[in-house]
Image (cartoon, rainbow over all chains, first blue to last red; front, side, top):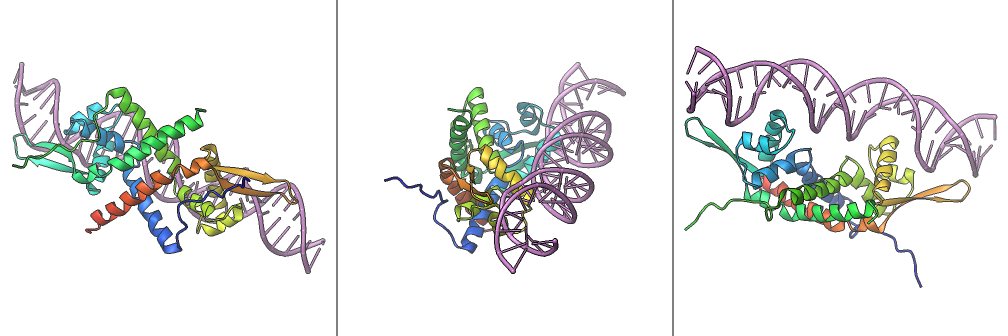
Length: 123
Length: 123
DNA sequence: GTAACCGGTATACCAAAGTATAGTGCCCAA
DNA sequence: TTGGGCACTATACTTTGGTATACCGGTTAC
């Protein structure tokens, strides 16, 4: 005998628990959101640490957006701006260990995104 | 002896692989993005299936946004709009099994979001 | 000295996302 | 018959996100 099972989402949570979860999820999404953040993270991860190098690696990004997004990522402690006391000063952007903790999230997003793509484009 | 380890992001990927991954991640983020989508999913998951009921459960949402977001979620096959041939017609929004597959992603986002919150607000 | 590179900032603009407010057509109950 | 609920849509507006273009001060290479 087959009955239509209600599709629910995780265990039901009481109101405050639910609000807390929602805030956490929003926080995570906000950190990753924006047209360029992921590409910047990838560029740095792939070995580009200088402003101009990152700019060159990401097609069409403007210095304004790069500057903005670097600041946002730094505020979120995903990267650190390091000033070397050379002449002229050199500046490097490096991912922090905290950025590393994003890996699992990103892997899940990638997996689901790929699954979703198949689903929508008709396997 | 301690050396500063380079923080990299997953295994390095070649360019096409990387672009594919990026697209998948973007797809996933886009599905969840928007101020109201998660709350709508939660409302439906928690048993509200009618337009007005969902609207009442989500404070401050306007019917315009609810309508838009429901359409977006339906396009992404996360929910289905079911029209019952009653008088007057009743309409119900139900999550699909595909929505269920989002659970792991959302759990990861929630976990990381909570971790991040602690990190930023100074444990 | 002047042209070019680095690491950005400033100003103006444009487009997407979200809000506010009102109104539609249908049904039903009093 | 009129007032209310349901499931929305329409129009106008504001806010946020992103683009385009130009420029800045300091440093080196010619």
